[in-house]
Structure formats: C-alpha cells, structure tokens
Image (cartoon, rainbow, N blue to C red; front, side):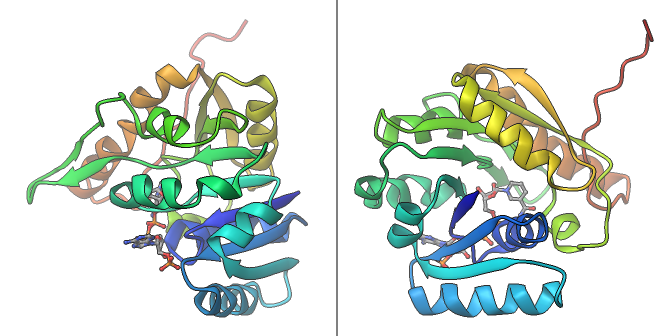
Length: 222
Ligand SMILES: NC(=O)c1ccc[n+]([C@@H]2O[C@H](COP(=O)([O-])OP(=O)(O)OC[C@H]3O[C@@H](n4cnc5c(N)ncnc54)[C@H](OP(=O)(O)O)[C@@H]3O)[C@@H](O)[C@H]2O)c1
C-alpha cells in the first residue's frame, strides 16, 4: 500500500517507515519541509541497510495526496494546526491516529484528553467526512519499531467505526513482526486506549522497564 506519514521525520514516523518498507509497502515520509522529508527518507533507507523497500520524502500535502493510508505522526500539540492546514489534501484515504494527548507534570505522565474525549475523535472532526479513520499504535514505542531486528511481543488496540479502515490497519499491524492487532471497539473507545500510553510510561519509569507494552491475555482456554 502507499502509506504517507504526516510528520514522518519524527520518532514514530521513522519506526513505521522502517517496518512498513521492510514489509514491501511504498512509504512516503511527509514533513513541513520537502527537503527534510527527503533527507529523512535517505536516512531511513540507510538504517534499513538494504533490508527493504521503497521510502520517499515529500512535503505533507503531497504525501497525503499520494497516500492510500495516512498516519498522523505529529505530537498532539500540533494535531489541530497540522490537520486543518492540510484538510484540502484529503479525499477518501484511510487515516490512522496514534496520537496521545498527554503531559508530563514533572513527576508523572498524565492523560489530558481534549473536549471531544480523545485525539482520534478530535482528528475525525478536523478531517473531511469522506476519510475513514481508525486509531491504533498508541502503546508501541518508537525505539522498538526502529530496532528492525526486534520482534514485538505486545498487542496494539484498534478503535474505529469504519470496518474497512479497521481491517486495513489490522493488516498493517500484522506487517510489523509479531505485533498482534486487537479490536478495542468504536472510535468512542479510543480515549481509553490513548490513556494507556501515559500509564505505561509511568510504569516503565517506576519499574525500570524499557519500552513497556500491552498484551491482552486469555486466562481461560476454551
Ligand atoms: N514516540 C513514540 O514512541 C510514540 C508512541 C506511540 C504514539 N506516539 C504518537 O505519535 C505522534 C508522533 O510522536 P513522535 O514521538 O514521533 O513525535 P516527534 O518526533 O516529536 O515529532 C514528529 C514530527 O512532528 C512534526 N512537528 C514538530 N513540531 C511541529 C509543529 N510545530 N507543527 C507541525 N509539525 C510539527 C515534525 O515534522 P517536520 O518538522 O518534518 O514537519 C516532527 O518530526 C504523537 O502524537 C505521539 O503521541 C508516539
């Protein structure tokens, strides 16, 4: 698939670009500056060291127009301005939000949801009605993704109201070895999933764990 990463020059964007290029996707790194995106694409290909695939860089608007799936890989603070500013570039793409609205108080990470309830619902309201949005990948660490030899042990919880978008995102999750996608309900449930990230960061810090993730276990085998 053609996957465009808005703000793909950042931490999670680089991780996604690596993993999905290895899986054979056509990855487009987006940036506010086309040059920065092209440099980032080159750097990502260097990190892959011949292990994959197709990675290109262009400005965010061109990346969105070229993409079939668009990942909003920007910090929550810029979600509003970036998404509104690029609204005209969207048509009927599938949009994925891994965005987590959170703050660090100096002592611990805190979930700070917007008025809409979650970053995903906020993003949906900023985008044209014709796009299909799902939220996913909130609890996956960028450094785990960027370590291309690392097999992921956790799950990713996916929320959305559009069945096609959810299926596409599930398939993209499965392309990241051995990440397991789990359906976590409608978009209205995204706030609960987004809130897991600050929780995991607090747990990781207090228990000296690296890249803490989420795994849903079935205690009773049928
Ligand atoms: N990092 C993680 O481990 C992780 C895990 C799960 C979910 N997430 C979520 O993924 C999203 C991206 O996280 P990240 O850690 O990759 O972020 P990041 O590295 O801090 O930033 C990503 C990109 O956002 C763009 N950006 C920065 N400031 C901007 C501004 N003022 N206006 C417009 N664009 C701006 C930059 O791209 P250009 O300068 O190239 O435009 C930057 O490379 C966040 O919403 C986060 O909650 C992150």
